[in-house]
Amino acid sequence: MEKAYRIKKNADFQKIYRHGKSVANRQFVVYSYDRQQADHFRLGISVSKKLGNAVTRNRIKRSIRECFKVHKEDFLPKDLIVIARFPAKDMSVQEVQKSLEHVLKIAKVFNKRIP
Image (cartoon, rainbow, N blue to C red; front, side, top):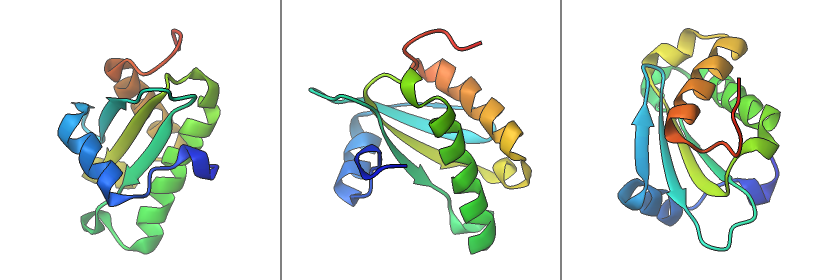
């Protein structure tokens, strides 16, 4: 994911947590925040150490990023934070993608209808 599409600063994370809207399912929590004068979405990923060792956490993050790469053009220009919950650690990439699509539809962050 290119640098312009990432959220890295703690201040940005805190602003989204405080002022953004959250939706969740069993595997993920998604915070969304509308930015003014935004051309594209930005993504922040949070995976707790409680989910496993570094290998497990990085695998989850790669799976989440892959879902966002597939739908890169379909998102509204918002800031998004995805927080992985415990059941996500045992999921395949396809299961992660299906679950994320579900929670992102609930969050209403897609430009158009995704099947």
